[in-house]
Length: 313
Image (tube, rainbow, N blue to C red; front, side, top):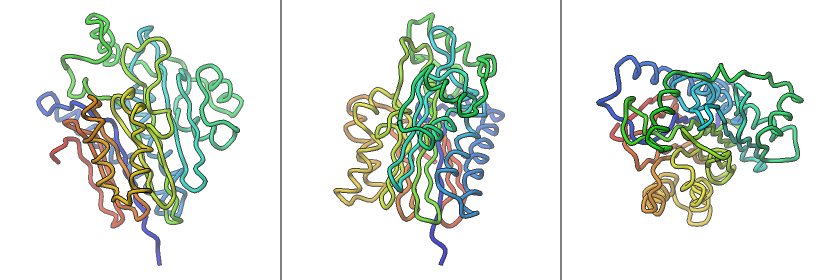
């Protein structure tokens, strides 16, 4: 009998406004989300590992300019791209992460290599890139990551002295851009991956939750895989991904109950806006958000594809 398998992905949560979403942009985003979840699902369908599935899914989103990760990453105060990513495999609780990398096309692949080919979990900055080049990653010029949209956002925030927009030109200018994937494979393995460009106009080497195991990413076989998206400082303080896993482990809560309790509970009361995606050991998925939208898609245990943007969908 075939074991259940499924995959869910997200492209960030936050204030995503219908009034400013053009049909052209909506079609492009929906197409990217579908391509991402299908890339991961193909690996699962072919009896591949959940880890490879989440990497494949996240790479699609990193390669798109429509999301704040990889190609579409936001710019720092110094007009540079600094990216963070993490990955976790639930079988032995193996994990890898990178933070503040500037010249790696697909940070999620580098996070996977940290997990597989080093004795460490988290590498940062120049050291992470030195490790990358030793392990065959190609140097990517900053020009590859530059987009006019992100430059316009940076100028707007610098003018206002902010690192979160108070007014929107695009439908998701107030979205906390992160991409991620969670999956259950046919062997019972759970995996999670998260990648981001951080926040526009960030300074001083700021790092959010996307590279922090237990905050932005968590996976544990027999329990749950989680990837978060939101205001990183709050998600770190509440160890959101790990909290969902703990509620399911110790309180025996369903994935939907645990996810909503965290996202709609103390995190929201603290002022932490965002969401998460989660899949349990039976392949049941849940999208939790306390924002107006989250770019997301799933192919469930029955093979049904669903792609959504707004919270009321």
